[in-house]
Length: 424
Image (cartoon, rainbow, N blue to C red; front, side, top):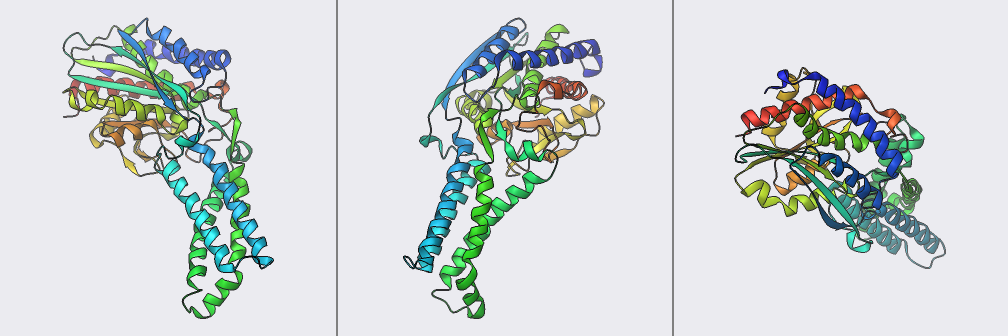
């Protein structure tokens, strides 16, 4: 079967099903912090549904530290504020030298920037040893082909929701988020450079510039400390986004991909279709990182051509794109698979998609690509970012059925094309 022959009524019915199910999940199971009991309860609810149209469903558990990914914002900001203020007071009272103060402040800021790069830019599990571990779960549903498995396509979405980002909730559509984060990160970088220059000026004659840096550069550190107050307040760990769009839309894109094939009576000869519902994406891609590690041989060395399409937020239709670059632009997804998704979108009647870059943050697809597994990402969210992103506005009243439907059509078309053509 080709996408053009797929019954439109099945897609429409599953869009309605998705809206109802997302509403039900949010009302029934409450806040879904990464690794908490609500996440698992929601996954069990979904498993019960998938048991009716999958050949197999199964859970895999792993350990993660939910707060490690973003709680460093409070630690780093507090340490920098403390270093700047205390050293400033000690210099003013002549207890320590200006040179020593610059060494301390520069060192603390360097450590803060290093943690930021390791956690938020590279998504390393750098801070995890310092935090309490909980048990997370990944759920997999499988529709087997009639014959030998020669190809496997996995549609993936994450079930967990984010801690609230105050900058976006209170700033709404204003550039407050970008301004404050630019001030925070930019200020820290400049402060570190100033500290290095000021330390160097103690040993190297830099003329009037060196004198100026020695006399006045510390004042900039106070501006950086002020910016760190906004970083300290950035995450509200007591408030969890409902996660209707980010990412129950992606979750149900995976679920309904299999449900729609079942309803239309589609059975492939050699292509296995899987729905993966991960936990821990909002905790730094922890669920997908673990899955990619545990299933690398199966997905890469088994002789079964495998590709993973991660779906993350189907809401802002004008921004529905194939995100072939990820993790703040540092990860490039598989070129052939990204092009297959793009071509499939065109075949489904949606020729306005573009290749795009997740320029701030990351999707689960990056964890697979980093592990050497073929993957790419499909998403539809205003990168400004959207006013519902990671805050309490991301509720079921903000769902956009048209965007969900368009995403479903692209996914179905991709599945049919992958079955027919594969990547090689």
